[in-house]
Amino acid sequence: MRTTRFRAVVLGGSSLVVFSLGMVMAAPPRRPPARPRPSPSPTAVSRPAEAIWGEADRLVGEQKYEAAAAVVAQIRARAQAGGDEDQWTRALVREAQLRSALHGYETVVRLLRETPWPPGPAGHAVLDLFHGQTLVNYLRAYSYEIRQRERVESKDPLDLKKWTADEIGAEAMRAYARVWAQRDRIGADPIDRLGDYLQRGNYPPRVRGTVRDTVSYLIVELLADTALWSPAQHELYRLDMTSLLGPVQAGLDDPAVHPLTKLAAVLTDVEAWHSAAGRREAAFEARLERLRRLHASFTASEDRKQIRGDLETQLPAMRDLEWWAVGQATLADFVKEEDASDALVRARAIALAGAAAYPQSIGGRGRASARSRWSTPTSRGSSSAPTPSISPIGCARRRTTTSCPPGRRCRSWSKARGRPRSGRPSSRRPPTTGSTARS
Image (cartoon, rainbow, N blue to C red; front, side, top):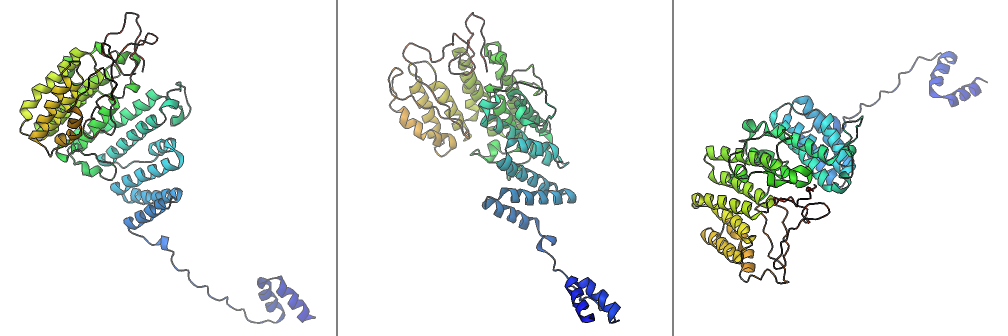
């Protein structure tokens, strides 16, 4: 009977087996077999940062963005605990990019606002630039939907889906302005310091090669976006061209100052900074950018004549430098858009002069295709395609032109809304109906 009961107990479980053996057979207790020690897992070993980055890149290549974001978050946490600001910044930017691919821009803005940033100025500058550019890209990608929104009070200040276009543009400008405020501290750093975060254009380093250049031209691009202007700011006839061409000082955070005035102030600062350091080509490029932006905004012949005159005054002093050819190319673009009958002929001669002096320069090469089209200019009243407008060096977007019938102006005021049909701001005085341009 004991044997039978013992077997029944065995079926009950091993813990009861020992108990039964101790009571019935009085056998000495047996030690349980020693468990083998677990081998250390690969994740427990401290691996070099580059090895972990390689794993994240592999996951991205396999389109496993969620897993890659988790790996990058671990890198960020380790860098934050160790005070490694470079890795901290790099990981936060990469994590934001991965979260954007997964969940959209709203998640990125929340991540950047709620996650601690490195305390150093370099890390703050990179993250502010990234934050501002993210907002600008979001505004451009969803422009139509965003412009339908009305301003509402939200309990969640980070709910990007409720921000209006004005609020998004203002937040982007604040992010840029924080970097702008540190321009004297970090502005002289080479642009290579932002190499992991910036897609460089074809500008030579001697022309746009510093962090100060990058920040300045990003601000200029945002200020030149007329979609963010108020209706009153489209009334460009209220601005004085002579003041815009001279030294300008203005605060970026002053809502009463026109965006073009702020734009001129930023480029005045860059031009003066480069001039003081003897970087003549970089200073000249800042002047060219100001003239390009003003020429694109103002359409009155008197204003454009004044802009061309300023450029013609600047060019002789730059004749010994290669960037003079870029100035010639810019002047050719300006002359080409004149109403005079010989505008294309004079524009071609100006472009040829720049290409002949510096044929291998950016300005000289940029005129190669234009010269072939300008060799046989067509009449303004013909039905052939208009002469294309060549964008400034490094600009990713090209401006398009429209042909005008003989005896008529391309830009006419809409009777319904009192703005140019092309949608661009006009420097001409509107009709006496009292209507103003609308953004």
